[in-house]
Each structure stands twice: as C-alpha cells, then as structure tokens.
Image (spheres, rainbow, N blue to C red):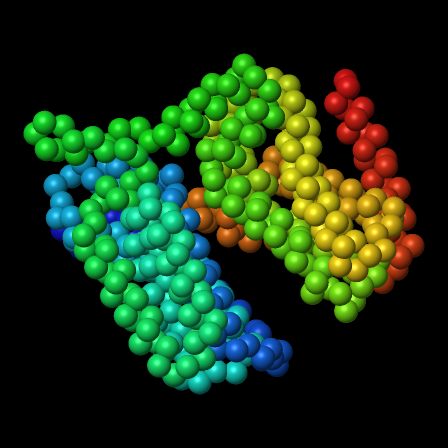
Length: 420
C-alpha cells in the first residue's frame, strides 16, 4: 500500500514516466559546472549555508503541502482504504523528494560551485535537507498550534546560527528529526488535508469542503457582480502565504538601506527598486486561478477591464514596498530627493505593466503544483529587466530622465484607457 501510494503521488509530481527528474538533474549539473569553471568564489560560513538550505527546503516543502492541487489528489486518496502511518510517510517522502530534487538541488548546485566545502560538510547539508523536510511536515500537522510551531522554528534557527559551524551539529539535527518523526507517527492523512473532517456515527471520517475553498468560491461569486479590486483583496485573504510573501518584501525594503549604506547615493537606489519588484505571487494571478483566466478571456471587453485594474493593483503593492524603502533610506542615510521618488514610481509602474503583459500573453502552463508556479524561471524576467534598467540608470544618470519621460507618457496612455 505504501509503495502504491508513493508511486501515485510521484507520477503526478515527476510525470507519468518520471521524465521531469532527468531534465531537472541535468540542469543542476549544467549550472554547477558553469559556475565552477567560471572560478567565482564566495566565502560562506557553514552555519549560513545550512540555514539557507534548511529555510529554502522547509519553505518549499510547506508550499507543496499547502498546494490546492495536492489537496484534490489527497482527498481522492483518502477515500481509499489505507494504513495511516504508511500513508503519511509515503506522502511526506514523495513531497520531500520532489522538494529536494527539483528545488533545493538547484540551490545546492550553486552553493557547491561558488564556495569551498569539505566532504563532512556535504553530509551535514544532506542531513539539513532531510531535517527541513521532516520538520516542515511535522509543523504542518500541528499548524493549528501555530505558536508552538513558531517557537520550534525560532529555536532551530537560533541553534543553526550559533552552533551550525560545530562538527557535532548534525547530531542535533538528527535528534530534532527524530522528534518530527514521532509527531508524524501519531498523525494520519487527514492532518495534511486542508479541510475540516467530521466523524460520522460509523466512525468513518468524511472530509467536507475546506473553508479556504468556501472563501474562494464566495470571492468568485463576488467578482462576478463586484469590482475586481474586491476580488484581489478577497483572493489575498484566502491565500495567506501571498500576504506573508508581501510582508517579507516589506521587511527587505526596511533593512536594505542598511546594507546599501556604503554605496549611498542616487546610483544605487534604482537597484533597490528593481529588487523589490520580485514579488512573484501577485504577478501570476491568472496562472494560479484558471477560473479567473477563463472568465476574463471568454467574456467580451475583459482585456481592458481586467488588465488595467490588475496593473494598478501590482503597482500599488510595488509602490508600498518602495515607499517603505525610501522612508528607511531617509531615516538611515538621508538625502531622499524628488528624483528618487519619481524613480520609485517608474520602477513600480514599469514592473507592473511588464508583469501583466507576461500574464496575459504568456501565462505559466504545465505546473504540477502551485510551488512550480512560484519558482518558475519566468518569475525572474521582470526583475532582470528592472535590474538592467537600474544598472543603466546608475551608469548613465541622464538615462534616468529619459525613463521618467517615458513614464509620464505611459501614465497618460493608461489614464486615457481607463477613462474610455
């Protein structure tokens, strides 16, 4: 039963013939070899390396466990006869393998190529990946007790920062992994389902529609007779991980001026604006919500009615991060000028326009779960374009005035479209 369950989930994630796995591993090898022969080296402490791998793996594992696509498959599998312990560990093993092989493998290839490491450290990184998968799964089972999970995660992060360079630290991670295994041993498959389970008189658990699905359905109904802005905010309220990602970008905006203090000046500010445009979830709304995409593409006149509000919504999110960045810059470094404010408006609006155009003409297809959409290479297109523009504006300040002139023209065009 455990083998059959694992095989069913593995075929969904890796393809019917596991064709996705060789392509991913080949890409990891190519990236590792390309960076290695380039000779680019960075000093990375062992504790920082373990923290990066652990945080990234746990985050992707949590996204995979929270995926709505997985929830549908899980609901169907839970209707079949099963052994709870076998089902839990097969499900965690497949999602963990997917996380490590398709996501963390890329990060590991980059770290191994650009930093010096010893074989014993490679074993420690492998243990940290296993530990992150098990801990994320155990914390997800206990997500109702979020405060306990928060304390647990804080304790582990603190231990990695202060003790991660010790040779015996891997034993501590293995001990914590054993605690996570005990938690999973007591869990069943319904602990991973994003719905509420009712115990009927015969004792058979039947899963009903989750509150998140109810909210989304209600949001879609409201969308049909209400404004798109109401839908955007309802969609964010139904997907709290989107709000968390936005909050993280705001924290980055606040602390970034501290790290850019040595390069203080107008030339580095556009780079900060370009970095803050990397807010993936709100830029892939059509790719994530197929019902919304079908509605806006088949109803007449929806290109203008949807794309303009969507562009303004992304612009508002980007501008909020840029405002926090400028306020933090003024407090820590001082010297915020009108030109910096105009640059913030340009980069926020330009990244919003490019994101909407990509979503409309080139939506992401073929993702197995929502995590694939979040980590799709297309997410880097707009930030890379913004970084190139920021670098050009830093090298040739006159170019910034040209970009601002284009901003003024673009704003006039968008306002004209809105008032038509």
